[in-house]
Length: 122
Image (cartoon, rainbow, N blue to C red; front, top):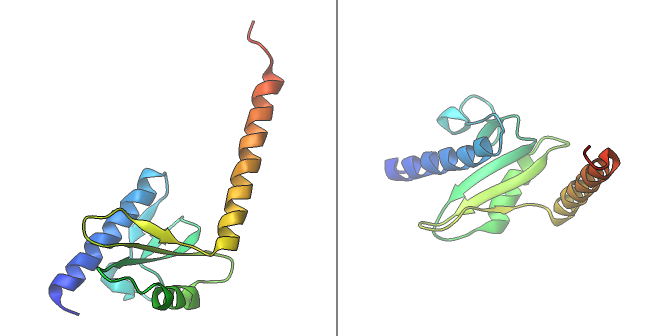
């Protein structure tokens, strides 16, 4: 891997970490591309194994295989990827995504119920 490819990869990992940080997660880039025996490109309190890919040509099946083989039991596998001048996208297992969306809907319904229980302000 050339120096420019390493820099591009590092920059991509920092960009993805910043997205998670903006959402309130404690998330950092793994130094030395996993040289500390940490699998994945990011670490912190994000409940997912995140692989970051910044390539002009997508190789989703290879990326998914790598990420899913390294994902510890019980964590969501996420492949974050983009090409130059594009938005970041994420690849996740559809069944796990459906579970996350169902959990979110349930949380929103609970919050809506809490607001109704408060009644009108006096």
